[in-house]
Amino acid sequence: MNNLTKFLVMTSFLVLAGCENALVVKGNFPTPMIDKIPHKVGVYYEPEFRNYVYKEDSKDRSKWTIDTGEAQMAVLGKVLPRMFTEVVNLSAVPGEAQSQNVDLIFSPRIDEFQYAMPRETKINVYEIWIKYNMRVYNSQGQLLADWLMTAYGKTPTAFMKSKEDAVNEAAVMALRDMGANLSLRFASIPEIKAWLADHQTHATAQTDSVPQQGEANVQ
Amino acid sequence: MFNSRLLTPVVILAATLLNACTSVTIDEYRQGASHLSDGDAIVLLGRRHSSDYETEPELVSCIGGILEGGTKAINVIGEREFLDSLYPWFEPRTAPMSMKRLDQMSERIEFANALDRYNISYIIWVDGNTETTSSSGSIGCSIGAGGAGCFGFGTWDKESDYEATIWDYKNREILGIVSAGATGTSYMPALVVPIPLIARVQANACKGMGAQLKTFLDPSSAGVAAQ
Image (cartoon, rainbow over the protein chains, first blue to last red):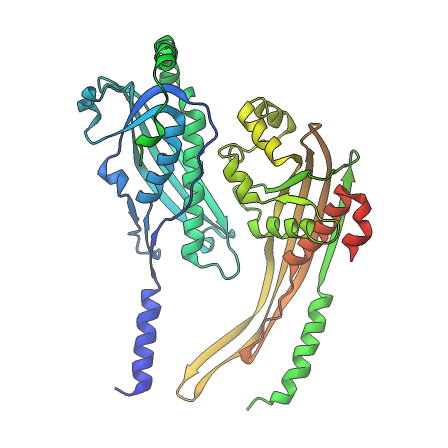
């Protein structure tokens, strides 16, 4: 095999490798400026949520692998301690969490993940869309509220910006959107609103006597 | 083979054409007088609620750079810093679309305190984008044992359309609107090596918008901004 053939073979491998993109979403997420709900909440993350990786399996699209597990844990790690007076991580399914002595149990799940590239949509933006299934249980592990929440992020194409950077930025925007949506809408979900109204007096009495120490409990 | 002596006049001619192919139009609508004291700050934020385009962060930062520069510098808070400090109130789906909504948000003590800490006088919303409106021509490249090269000619038109709405945060009123439109044609002749001659449409829209905003916010800087 002469040098030119070697060069062409190696170039072909590089071009083919370029069709597969693997991305671990990285970003810095801010702490939200919101009012605390005066309750102690337990959070249960399923392993599928904690380690969520989206793999594109369509033959018609480039092979993207997008890992959002760590990044979405980082967002919730910033948002939840600001939403509640105390947050504890649970390692068991909500039904077995009674002994944790929490008021509510929160457990998120991803139902669907989609992305779109500029050449597919004909607009100069990269888009990420995530459909979350948010579930809240009472302290006995009974399902209290179960709702779908979409998170959307997009970023414009830019000169000299790689596809990976653009998709990462769109994913970070989607995760920020999830954090914003969760922190601002949580208390207005009808079932939760009703539960909070029922437990208002109890919680007020508790927060008067218990110091707020929630922020150190979530990693 | 290609005569390299021919390249220089071709490049100069193309560069001359490049300058001739960008035009910028600026409009201003003013509803009240602006006033910036020492220590007052402004923040420029891109509107990102539309589903089919996104105001480019680099455009927002470019305009901010113009306002911050020169002898009559204005204190501009960085967009990302502001969005992070006020999270989640200025995200694409939660940002106030009207002065009334901003007023409601300001009733939250923590929110109002954050804006007061920055000493924000004006919030400027920049909305718009730059897009390629048409393109034509073709360039073919080939690689062989004897070398590689490209031949052909490509051209494309870009259009920028931006509008900046100035909100007077202290008086809770819309002070005015500055709009900037720019169009330009880029060329890519390829004679062995492609030579991109890019019309800096977005950069020119930024310059025009930045200079106009500077005189809008501080009329005494009119001469300085024009330089």
